[in-house]
Length: 487
Ligand SMILES: CC(=O)N[C@H]1[C@@H](OP(=O)(O)OP(=O)(O)OC[C@H]2O[C@@H](n3ccc(=O)[nH]c3=O)[C@H](O)[C@@H]2O)O[C@H](CO)[C@@H](O)[C@@H]1O[C@H](C)C(=O)N[C@@H](C)C(=O)N[C@H](CCC(=O)O)C(=O)O
Ligand SMILES: Nc1ncnc2c1ncn2[C@@H]1O[C@H](COP(=O)(O)OP(=O)(O)OP(=O)(O)O)[C@@H](O)[C@H]1O
Ligand SMILES: N[C@H](CCC[C@H](N)C(=O)O)C(=O)O
Ligand SMILES: [Mg+2]
Image 1 (cartoon, rainbow, N blue to C red):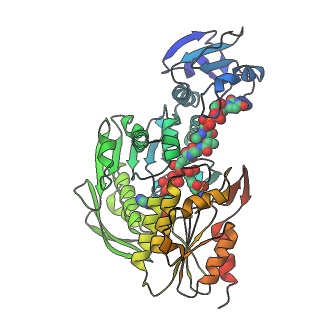
Image 2: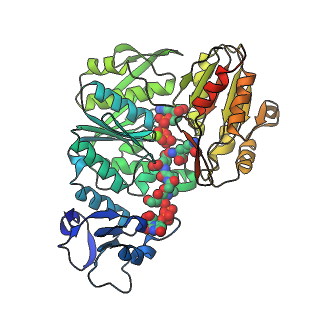
Image 3: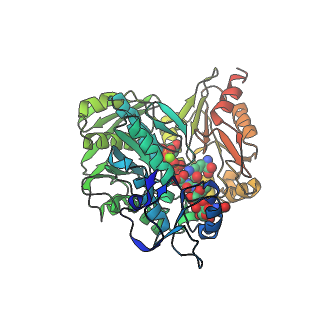
């Protein structure tokens, strides 16, 4: 419960009609979630316009409305607040409603195309290990110290986000590490948050269905840094050419990390094996359990952020060397036949390229590499042929299959992928629409010491078909098939 006039603090109003001195019981941007005493925020969406649901919200008990366009007829007893941008105002209002929890802990946001979950999860594990009560908001799961809460999005909406941060504060958390997706930045889910730091991992092809051009996608990621306060740090990967762009307009303290160039935080890969990475990180040699060049970047970002949060370097490295990383990221599935079976969340061309290059560098090339991969429906179509092409480039056999078809015809998605496979590579490519059958076939093809990569769904425990999420777990299926494989 909070006073309307208090939760409007910091919102620039165009017009206001009605009483500001009233208690608000809840905030909602979806009319279906309105209960008595709610402030309803009308948001123009891609499918419908929330303004069309103002009367439904009032019927459900909304007593105040935040909107960009005032309805032609204003109801008696309802307060109407007109603003220029409802999503941005909703973020500020949500932060005020929950008493600005982001100011009561150290909040660090991680953005970039790949590596957000890994980086945020490692930071969460590290800070817990260093003795802090810590929160995590990620694609895989949300955590309030040791309590696990399911995650629906990479970045929750502003209302849920502030509610979660408030719970973290209530439970004594001093730090929170969160992923910040480009969708979240454009939709103002992080408006009104006070960040202590922002990390940029990298930028490559993804989500062009939503952002339309690569420039728009870059601009979206940059919002995080443009809005950081002076008291915060910005930490960017300068081996990615967009790293410097992120720093262009920030007021925050600028910091860089790199494996190749001059930077504030530097690392060198000494050994890269299937058991882990040995890095020279800031002049200290240490082994880490994570695998692959790209994880050297994630580890370096985590190290840099921890140092910027004033943690002791040696202590950070000792703790980091124990960490396992996030679920479904280069996760190996043990099996009696000693097939090297890997589940990975690579669902962009760049991630797939990185994972396959890592495997390519680590393998002997006497064995066979079978890659099982699909692409999600209702998502960027242009990545489909690219991902298929990359899979074929590195693998001895490729099985193209379904990911989450969502509302698309899986056959169409497979046709889009097939368009990326050259005539020559068609010979090593199979199409098996049913993902379980595809994994079974890979297991039948692979013998001892061969390698199977199942890419795209990582930690996901469902397959989404026409709005229904059926239980599906790549790791579980792989294990079942490999355990039953004949020796
Ligand atoms: C593409 C996208 O991001 N869409 C988001 C967007 O939907 P939309 O614009 O279509 O909304 P809409 O359906 O037109 O509705 C407009 C408004 O009317 C309201 N409404 C609607 C119907 C009704 O009866 N009453 C009502 O009030 C809606 O609640 C909404 O506020 O706004 C909705 C409400 O905030 C989000 O739930 C929805 O996320 C959808 C479900 C989604 O799948 N998002 C994904 C792509 C996403 O955000 N992913 C990123 C990760 C990406 C990455 O991997 O990097 C994430 O952060 O998770
Ligand atoms: N720093 C990195 N650079 C490039 N690829 C990476 C990096 N870190 C991880 N990957 C690859 O990308 C996949 C996804 O990693 P992760 O889940 O950490 O990224 P994310 O940014 O959170 O993805 P999403 O946007 O879907 O939430 C991993 O499974 C791995 O294949
Ligand atoms: N957060 C990403 C995850 C994609 C994972 C992949 N399995 C798919 O369903 O496309 C998205 O919503 O685009
Ligand atoms: Mg993620």
